Length: 217
Image (cartoon, rainbow, N blue to C red; front, side):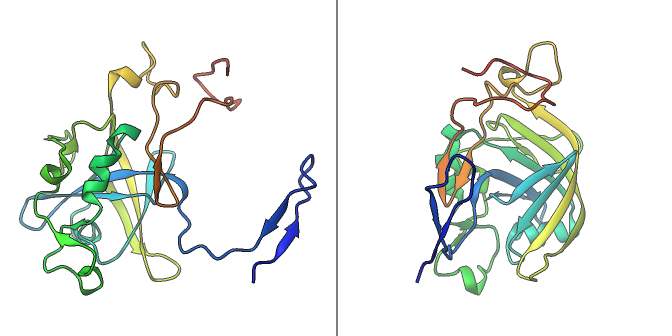
């Protein structure tokens, strides 16, 4: 039975919380498409939503049995492609596909093997400059990277990948003119919120550390 606890948040003393046990905790994280190199020299493209950045290191959480994890264990080059909200159908076209053959036993009821993930998604591969896997041409931000550490997470159920970003490519339409900054007013990541796709809403404000401050509406 759910139990309720009284909130002590200032200005919100009447709100109550309930204790729940959600099956997943994707509480609003960006979607990325990871391109990696297969054993035969072809390339895999896989969607995932457990990604975050610390400086120029990207941390990824992966299932250990997927083709991306298999590739990164021995071929560390990758590209982290960030789609925009309107590209969610391309992401969803990839969602039921796997680059693993034969399909792992735990995926056979849900996933099917697809050797050409770029074509399946309706995206065009374009050459990278510093790594072997291609970029997804239509994605507004593309991060060429190299995995420096691939290891199990604390539970042993997933892999944690730490990758150094080597080069950043951005659509000029989302770059502040004359600068090296992505314009947060024109760039919106695709957000995965409890298995539903969203974009960002209107700006509420900016951090005191922002280098692209603007007046919020």
